[in-house]
Length: 485
Image 1 (spheres, one colour):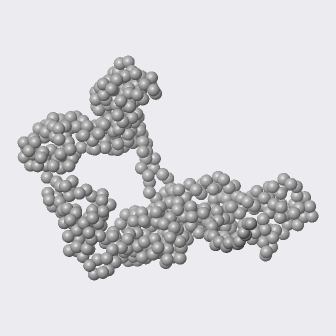
Image 2 (tube, helix red, strand yellow; image 1 turned 45 degrees about the vertical axis):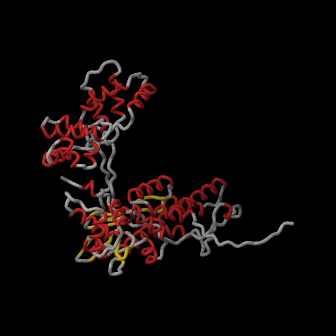
Image 3 (cartoon, one colour; image 1 turned 30 degrees about the horizontal axis):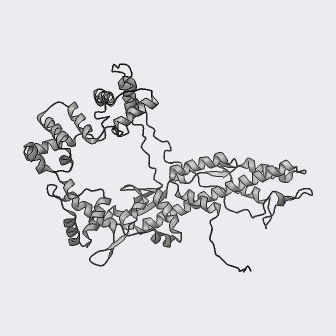
């Protein structure tokens, strides 16, 4: 026997419009502009430029009575068949216009010959036999943007056979690599690892006693040099500390990534466009949203007139029904998009304004030690919004300040107790740790244990493992690797 029962569930679901709004909020300025272009291309009822917003609203409101039901009357047409009776929102259909002094919208582009094309052009100055040119061009194509060939030679030999129908040997490929590729500019390009890259650069320079010694050390004691085992190097090569210091200075002048230094590299650096600007005016903070986040959009008057024309028509055909349904869909979508943009603007401004006032002391001085502990919930509670909304603003937006352009999420940090029992930002502790390491004696760098003692003396009682974690987050090496001659 089947037993029947009723269950009640309370579910909270986001509407498609809410999901789209959250996606708009997450977009940084440049991506937001692309999204607007896409919407304009897909919706002919949405246009850019100035228009009388009130007139458009009036025209549309004439088609509906106070209950939201269309006033069009025709004996042979049931409006409910093709027009929804939901109330048309009364929000304004005009978004803010650009200011006259808008930021320049043009994007920089890399010009000239690309990195790999430059290398191929240099091959034209060499004489090749048989299939050597094909091999050389293949090697150039295998160089990454840093200037290295990361793949094994045997793999390149196999690829040459399968893709270029060139059957060769490892010895021949290595020969062309050393005789041709390693002589191209920038110096050091085509190396298979850092050791080979540095040696190539040293051998291309004018020979001196120091450079000859540097090559010898790199070729025969590379690991000792990288790990800064200076005493072992002095004993192995029977050299003084001063001689080793000269070698160290010579090698430090070399370029570990020859490809990245090429001006015409085929990677275009991403341009950061600040979404907000904070300025100090007469000792007060002034927050401005980038005008590119406030585009000028309006409802197409042509589409509005088409809908009005249907109202005045005496005979309504089936094709007209379909047309009106299409028009109304596009008009509703355009009105929603304009309203979503306004909501996006308000959300961005409210969130950033709250962050600015929460970190007021920092924005006045630029001193990172004045950053207060701040988590997403702190801001979400103040603006009465969801944590996910604050996260979307913080993770993808930049703000221009008198102290540089910053990613907003950098202002968030956890808190720790100092020796006074006060909550301090982990950012503050990291800044002090970074300063201590910068000022240490590089001949005797401080270990993590000693750094923990110093921080405790400064009023920050944290464990050695915590110091190690913060040091790694600051991308600072261990004491042994910070040692200098």
